[in-house]
Figure 1: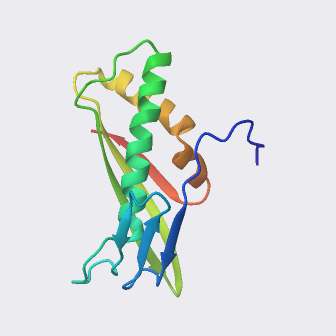
Figure 2: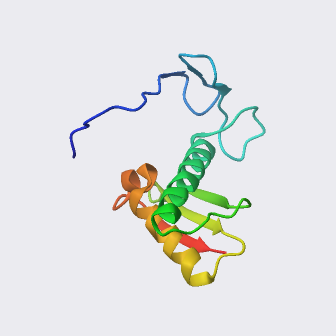
Length: 139
């Protein structure tokens, strides 16, 4: 683990009750959500949706950085469709992920290089590397 030279931001989130009927509120009250179990009729989101949203947003930022280093303009219509699977084997839960990257107008090889570069620098990609199966698809 590397030592932080400069902390850029710290998120503060207080969660109570867990994924089935729990709630979570940020210290600045900008994120105030309810949880429900995936696939249930309950009101609220779930941790897998939050991971998908956070990772895809961060990945787009990482692609902008990777494209800039390559002297490539990131298309305005850039999008990442993140899929996070909550899986069960025996009695053990685990996650797997697919990031479906859309870079319209870029040549396929350039788009692949941007996505691969982003996967190396994105903090979410780094946090999950070696821990869950991740597939990066350029669509």
